[in-house]
Amino acid sequence: MSHGHVAVIGAGALGLFTAYELVCRGAEVTVYDRLPIDDIRNASWGNAGHIVPVMSVPLTSVPNITAVFRSAFERNSFMVLPRRVDRKSIDFLTRFAVNSRATAWRRAIESLIPIDRLALAEFDRLTVEGLDLGFERAPFVSAFRTKKAARAQFADLLEVSSRGLDLDIALLNRDELRRREPLSQTEGQFGVVLENQGLLQPPRMLRSLVEALTGRGVTFVTATVTAVTGAKHGTRGVSVSTADGAMTFDKAVISSGAWLDELSAPHGVRPRVLAGFGYSLRVDVPDLPEGMLYFPEAKIATTRMGDSLRVSTLMQIDSPQAPFNPRGAQRLQANARRVLPAAHWDTAREIWHGGRPISSDGVPIIGETRTKNVYVNGGHGMWGVTLGPISARLLAEAMLDDRPEIDLAGFSPRRR
Image 1: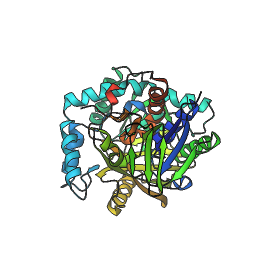
Image 2: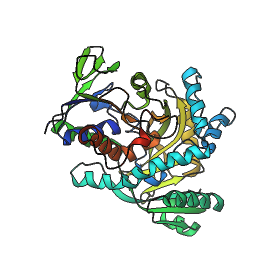
Image 3: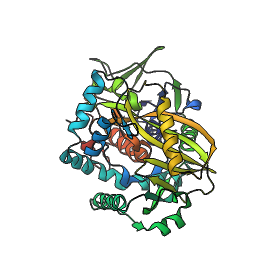
Image 4: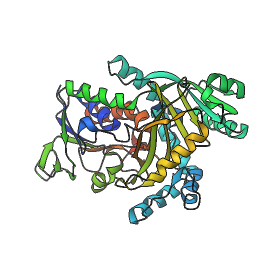
């Protein structure tokens, strides 16, 4: 059954997964992106590849907002103030601070738990359907310098899991940690392991999605969308404008990542979005991790990627147009060298930076705007890949079937 013609603006993980779910339900889909589809190196491409839903918690928290403002005085803060402070960034940071209160954080957690609970199973489903995402089940190991920090993370994970997430979790002493993950030997004195999580290869995931969508007749348009306009009186559909003109669709999904505000604000979307820039690189190592190895105190995330290691860090809040910051790349290498001295640093390559869309209340934005037939799927922060498949399926169900598996009210673009 045909569900009409839908425009999806944005070819990151969220946009492509959304297009996939829509086309599989019978919609005709056109995907817009400002970059050529065969040359995308966006935030999804640079994602660490960790599929660990229990870690998908709101970035709005007292420690994080404190780290943002301390970054004005501390050189090694993992969250960094915008380099250019304007009205938009002040508005965002004010909202972020208000939503970092404990009560607001707990409300955000309650919204996220239902989709966190479903996230891993979605990757299993898509793999069975034939998508080659490079997905596999694997352990997630955190290496700590201090027992206090290890116990704190252990307690935090148990608190989140007590709200409905099943976890296979254990503490590791130094010998157990080093035997399991030799790369942790310099930094790790204590460990926390989460078994049966997931990892994937983000570049491979994007390639596979594009191939699958092309095979299903999806059209890709390389253009910057300048406006999405609702139907005028007496007409039907949604207009999508670019420099080359406008096209009319039955529905549109704005999934433009860190640029979400530009297109969604005219449609009454209340949460604000800024870019949370991350940095990553690849390096050869003598011992690849069993799965994912994380150094929480240094904020260094690593993932086995082929025969090398992807290393990522940092959350630099800024406008999506912010240029590459050499200091961010230098900070990544300096911190990574400290925790991974055994890596072959002369092989470091693919140094990347990109902006992940952070919402001002730490919760993804999924659903219909105040403009009929204009939808949003974005604002997931660092969890766009982790939550991409489940967010896309739920939105497609809401758009075409009118019966999503779980209530999306907590993610509404119109929420206060």
